[in-house]
Image 1 (cartoon, rainbow, N blue to C red):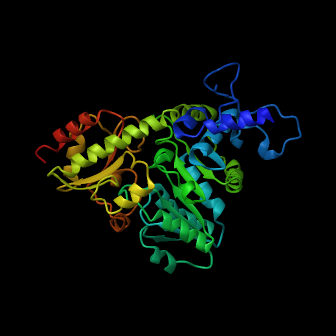
Image 2 (cartoon, helix red, strand yellow):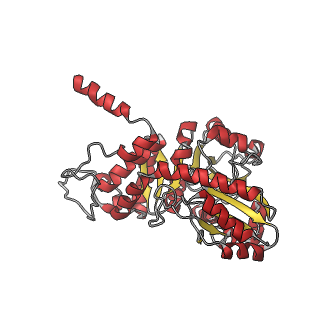
Length: 395
């Protein structure tokens, strides 16, 4: 009894996300006194013949010691019962959707999504006999009009890519519950530091761990977090489809997560500073960032989020050639897709993340040829602003 109380008290000490990022899942996982969890670079493990198939330790089944610690830490920091890592963010998204939905089902999806997700929903998911309707994230009445008897789920992003819209997320949860739908959200842009969708009532929270969770631009990974029942079903599908994360990538993701809170706090500050600078610059037409007072969903973002993340987008006055000139003049940001790393990255979405969309699809989503997306790193904000000032001079 006394020991139970001590163990319970020890667990209760781990409350803040900063502490969970360091210790969750690792309290009893030390190996020969190692402070850092070793890489278990083994495809298979000893089997005694009395274990169900999904519990046999095998790298493809996502259950090596590296996987297990990572799963527990992800679940704890996001407020979920269980978690599952995958080989990429798209592996997490597609496997989750193909588990939640079956032939004949119907999905409602936000109308401004990451290009890979949009392409899967417009060009591939139909091959599985699943229909999709796209809905504006801030018009619940439109969701109601598109409901069908076979509608099974609704899918949104915390902040849309690349326009940084904040959908009516509480409304999505209420709508899903009222209609018995599974609610899925891509929380990559916020990370669990800034927003924990499961606490709001979402069923499944998805991440491209390539981004903030890893934070160092050196692996590709994804994850699904939610109730045990859903994660177990998604894991079964993932195990058969083979989208597993290798143990060394698990090690790098686990290591990266330990500095997540520190990195995201700095990226929140840097993005807010750069967005404010750009919004006041005469060469800039508009800036998209939920942390700005002029953002149409600023009050909602302020109520829901602990920070607005490190991604912003903006348009300069002029055409795409002017945008390319600005990017070429910059010295600190690297012109590359992706986001969430310690270095600042910059790109035009029409050339990278949304290149797979047609011109008509991009126009419908409000993504212009001259739109520039900036994924702010952890450099000094003053240096970033000075670099953009030089690049915009004379534009």
